Figure 1 (cartoon, one colour):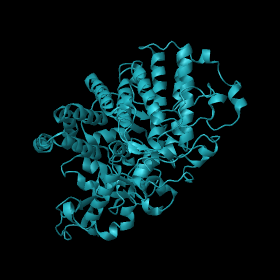
Figure 2 (cartoon, rainbow, N blue to C red):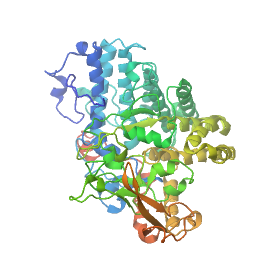
Figure 3 (tube, rainbow, N blue to C red):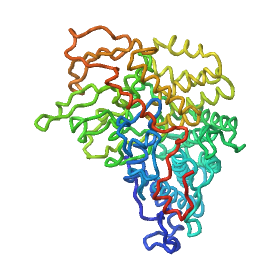
Figure 4 (spheres, helix red, strand yellow):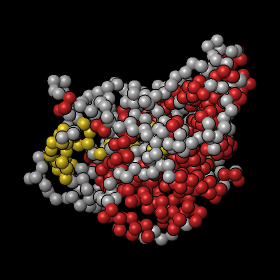
Length: 596
């Protein structure tokens, strides 16, 4: 059963409190550390407690996951032209006083709450738990270390240089300045190396039979991801550059990442799901069994988590599939549908041109029908209420986990690293696996073999990997960090603008894109009334008015306005790669925190 365990056995210290006496005094409700961390069951509850901040209202659930990751060249906020504090978050214009974020219980505070919980567990287990490899206590230590690394990875991703805390807070360490991110990355890489010696592979033990528990494949995958980020480009106070730290040199980080990815691949403990659609059906069905594509997921209970609430195909009201009328906050950029080859099986799964219409109060819930949406307001088809096993009944949460990492990313990181270190022939086998899953076997000679064999050299292979990353991960909010570390953020956003202008004028590479869509309704045994559409794919430009009951304009200026296109960013993204630290935390820092 999916759960987050709430515990009161250990003292959770606020990173914002100014009461030093509280930090020094024992809490009456706490259990002595020597008792707590010498018991496997109590320790397991304490380590589960490290996950609690993920689900707090203004933490990952309601602030970090819904807002970090847009806008990119493949994903955007469907109301990015609203001109309010919400749109500022995703158009590279956020201010420290942003009203959606500038609260004392925001994700920044919750991440440090999770770090404090982890620090207490790590100290206690090391002192009293005898955490040896191959033991449950060893696994729990590795899990605590990894959960702390997750919080830090996301702090670094969103804010750049942050406060480093790797011991429980004392009155002397209550107020600390930011630490250079390079030092934190080096600590995390060392920590994850240790954690990998302590935790089992997926399904190696009873405790790694599901992807809500930390396993070795995920630990190594996270270490690979952090190595590539640490060795890549990012915005420093003196500009966008690579790290100057020789320990984080690009070649060294690629070498580390490649070895970790190969360890995972050779272990055989994770694999691509055989079907791309099957992967996302499994995810929406809350199938958390280990050994497939998902490596680790942030666990949300049935009444918590807002991933579908935020990103699923839009439902305008309660209907057969959901008791909440939500989803559709973001979607693929309008041209994304046409980035896929028509035979690419990821196209229809990823880019959805419809929403579920409102059900009038006097009609049955089964009467909801699909309605075409404007081209600038599509949905992410990877997330669908209609693929849930059970109808969602909560008013504002859906209980769906967040898939933090999947095996496809391991393959693409391996391809990128191998290409950098050994050339395109070393990268090709990993890219090949991604492409093969994306196409029917009948298409492999052209879309897989000829495509990969036609890549002329290292640069072409790198560009192909960047392209495949776009096609594979659209809607998963991984693209922004990848573009930053490749030093491609602004250039790809500018390219996206150019493509949208060409799309709406049916010019250049979009000259064969239809400007009128024809549609009728057909009955589907599972879903009810669904759309039958002509005019979405390239080349579908014939007049089909006699064959379909309705039509609508498509990819024309009135449907994709200048203002909307330009809000893919409203301030220089290269000068705003990170969010500012919110003012409430600066004010509470005793003068230690500043925005550079």
